Structures are given as C-alpha cells and as structure tokens.
Amino acid sequence: MATFVDRYPEEAAVVRATFVVAFVSLGIGAFFGLIQALHRTGYVRILDSVDYYTILTGHGVLLALVFTIFFLLGLFTWAVARSLERPLPDIRLTWAWFGLTTTGATLVAVAILAGLIPSLGVSADVLYTFYAPLQAHPLFYAGLTMFIVGTWMAGADWFLAYRAWRADNPDDRIPLQTFMVLTTMLMWYLSTIGVAVSAVFFLLPWSFGIVETVNPLLTRTLFWFFGHPVVYFWLMPAYLLWYTVLPKLAGGRLFSDPLARVVFVLFLLLSTPVGIHHQYLDPGISEGFKFIAMTNTMFLLLPSLLTAFTVVASMEHGARQRGGEGYFKWLGALPWRDPAFTGMALAGLMFAAGGFSGMINAGMNINYLIHNTLWVPGHFHMTVGTAVALTMMAGSYWLVPQLTGKRLYSRPIGLLQVVLWFVGMVFMSNAMHRAGLAGVPRRTAEPQYQSFDFSTALGSVGELQAQIAFGGFLLFVSVVLFLFNILLSSFETPMESPVDDSLPAPLSGAEGSPLVLDDLRLWTGIAIVLVILAYTLPLGSIVTDAGLFGDSPGFPVLIDAVAMLKEVVA
Amino acid sequence: MKLTRAGVLILVAFSVPVAIELRTVFGLFGIDLPLAAVGVFEVILVAAILVAYAITAEPETATGP
Image 1: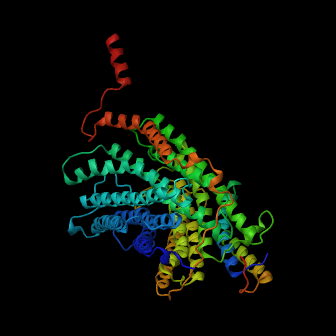
Image 2 (image 1 turned 90 degrees about the vertical axis):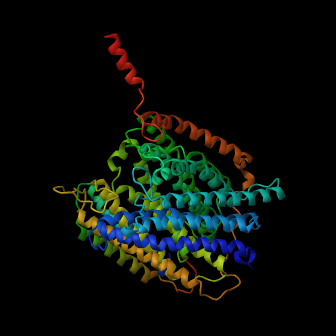
Image 3 (image 1 turned 45 degrees about the horizontal axis):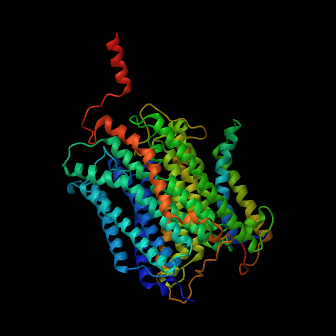
C-alpha cells in the first residue's frame, strides 16, 4: 500500500521542507523560552536583562509565527493533495511560496538576533506584536511582508488546486479537509489586510525615515485586526487534525462532517471582528466599541464548544469500537500507547482549560484584573503553546512517516515526550495564571519592584517562580526529545507502508449537510460585512483623533461642541 | 480495567494537575495547604497508580490502553 510520498513525491518534498523550517524554529524558540523562564525567575542568568527583549521577541516570533505557520503550510499542502486526490497544479508555484516565506522568515530572524550584537546596528526588539511605538530595523518589516505575501501565494496555490478539482467534479461536495483549508485561508486573506496596511503604509516608511511619526493606536488596532484571527490561523491546523485524524487514531470515525463545516464557517465569520478585545485598556477607543468586540468574542465560544462535543463524541465512538464500555470506562479503551493520539488528546484537554482562562481575558470588566499580567502568557501557553504546538508535534508522529516512507524511530520516546510537555505546561501555566492574579507583570525581565512584595492568594511567589522554572525546563527537554526522535527517524530504512494513513468516512457525511455550507462566496461576503461593521467607526474615530500619522491635533467631537454651545449661551 | 505502562504514564500525568489544584480547592474553603502536603498527596496518588498497575497489569505484548 503506497503512502503519501509514493503518490505525491513532489508535494511530499515541499511538505518536508516546510516541516524542517518549522522544527528548526521550534528548537531555537524553545531554547529562548528556557532562557527566559530561568532568567525571569532568577535561577540562571546568562544574558543581560536588556537582551531579554531580544530573546523574548525571538521566542514569540519563531514559535508563534514561524513554527506554527510553516507547519500549517506543510499540513495544508498535504491535506489539499490528499483530499482532492491530485497533485498541486504547478509545483513551481509551490516552491516559489516556500522560497518567499522562508526568505522572509530568515530576514525577520536575522533582524531580531542581530540585536544581540550591538555593533551591527540592526535590532528588532519589538516583540511578536511589533506595533508602534516600538520600532524595528526595516529588514524586520520587509521580511515580515515577504512572509505574509508568501502565505497568500500558498493560499492561491490551494485555491487553484481546488478550481482544477471543481472543473472535474462539478456536483461533488468539497472534500472536508480542503473545505477546512479554504475557509481558513479566506479568513487569513481578510485578516492580514490589517497587518499588511500597517507594515507597508506605516511601519516600513517609518523605519526607513520616510515619515517621522505614526499613529501608535492606529498601528496597534491594525495589528489586532490581524492579531486575533492569527490565533485561529494557528488553531485551524490543530482542528483539522482533531476532526479528521484523531477519530481515526482513536479507532473510530468523525462523528459529524456537517458540524465540522459549520465550525469552520463560524471561524471565518467571527475571527476578525473581535480584535479590539485585546485593547480593552487602550484609552483611545470608546467603551461602546469594546463592548461590541466583547459580544462578538463570546459568540466565538460556540464553535469551540461544538468542537469539544464533536471531537469527544468521535473519540468515544472509537473507544467503543475498541471494546470500551460504560459511562467513563471507555476512556481506558483509547490507544494511549500511541503518541500521536495521546499528544492530540492531551492537547485538546489543555485547550479546554485554556478556553476557560480565555473567557476571563475576553470579559471586559474582569480583563482589567489580569491585563498585562503573567496570566496572559499563562493563557496562551495553554492554547497556542499546547493545543496547537502539542497537536503539531503529536501529528508529526503520524505525518512524517507518510512524507518520508520511513517509520518513526521510537514510539515510547514519543509518548514520553508528549506526556512531558503536558506535565511541564501544567506546572508552568498554572504558576503563570496564579502569578498574574497576584499582579506580577508580563513582558519584563525584572518582575519585582522596589519596596513592594506581591501577595499571592496561595503559597508564595518563590514557589510560583520554582514552578515556572521547572515547567519551562520540562518543556525544553520535551522539545529536545521530539527533535531527536524526528531526526533519528530520517535515518530509518525506507519501507512500503510505515503508517496506516487511511482516513475513514465520517459517521454523518457531507451529504447530510445543507449545500449552502459550501458556498464560500456567501460566507466571505458576510465576513467582510461583519468586519466593516466592527471596524469602520473605531478606525474612523482613531484617525479623526490624531490623524493617519499621529501628527495632527484632535478634532472637536460632540462633547466639545456642547461645551462651546454652553459658553455661547452663557 | 487492565493497566499498561503507557496507561500508568498517562495517569501519573493526570495526577499532576489534580495535586497542584488541590491547594486551590482547599483555598476556596479558607485552608492554606502547605506545599509539602501537595507533595505527599502526589506521592500517594502515584503509589496508588503503581499498586493498581501491579494488581491489574497485563502482558505488554497484548493490545490495550
């Protein structure tokens, strides 16, 4: 039985290349994470605290943008070719977007790491959020722009493959994996408009000195226009694996294809008009706009809860196929020996916990309690740091053998690795959340203040520091195990069928879902309208207040007019 | 239910958040549990899992959880 590399050797080569870039970034980013965990907690300090921000930026960019998105590029290429059962239309285009994204990511990484050598005069200590007033070297913005354009080209590649398939299959439903890829990319096209405008029209000219000032609130808002949907851009590859691969690994079938489609449509609609919930404490945006963003955000719970139901139902079905019985005893029948299954299941479990802490972030009033504290990194280490990253690592144990035609070097090491990640993240993120509740700030190498002691509800700050350092250490060991397992797998002897790569049909198939779900034009149109409704007035207000480049005085608004009128009347 | 070594590993992993959050649960009732108590609780949990494994262990060649 031939596997993916035998059926689509050229596509497999591209996917392998994207995974190599992703895993190299993972290794460097994880090392930076260890340095931060030990530095912040005061256990080991190998760098000056000034350089902490260079390391922090490298950690955020290499893991949250490069590792996740390169894995996505490979996974989506695999998913499109596999589910459409045809190679991509022109492999030169595929290599072109790989080249552009890799060059862009390399330029970004060079700009960041050059900050460690002051004599070079190049630095980009702007954190992963990179909005003004922090300014990076032009190389950073140029690389970022190339990277984004490369992802657009990748999307075009997959849409062209879909168009060719549609010409041959005019009446068929879009295969589920391709549907997931296309809706995710539509969301990505819509949301990256914000970051593209910010980088090309404001940050790049500003870093070159072509314009002297920018409007910081405008660049922040444009970043978060993109900055929340990017969360779902990370998450959708994990969802693709949870919906289409995890049920098979559990021994069963996807519970419902239509529910999966509904979830991806909801993410297309709701991911973008919510970014202002990251700006609850920004003074230049009125409370009313923030309230609308909060309401939109709460609607996003719906697809997450649908996913929890569908994925758990699929796993239960698999367990019962394997002889599981009872209300809870079926859990014991799941294939816990399989690192791919166990890693994804643990990632999903951690995502549930991350969802709860995310609701605290999203609530406008309670957000004030934890805003800019260590709670926030605690939250996103559960979501992107585990739900996404652990799913990607676990998925690799099943995907990489298909791409190389070689078996995994060690399943026991893989199992230990995913469990170690889970335990490490429990230690680290739990302590981060609790430290955040005590008011310990994020994004600083020196979280302590003079003549002030943080007061924890339980235990001591010292215990929390120890927990963070220990958790960070376990996470780093986990990454080392993962990388060695994958590396050693490449030396295995090629074999005909290194892994069972077949995916069974869902219990409830696409034929049972309304045709309108596949109308991508309709959903894109509604998504655009929602973005216009959510952003037109806030952006208009921000530009009216201080101009496009932050260099004009505020314009009078209604309250000033009323005050002037009072004076005239008096 | 028969336990395998993989099952033991997973159960030990699940016991960690349970032990850590034990302090939070006690804290809700106004009881400040010392760190040592959490350590002892985790040791008891791990010991219970190992005992369960010793009692129910199946041959590693068989399929199962």
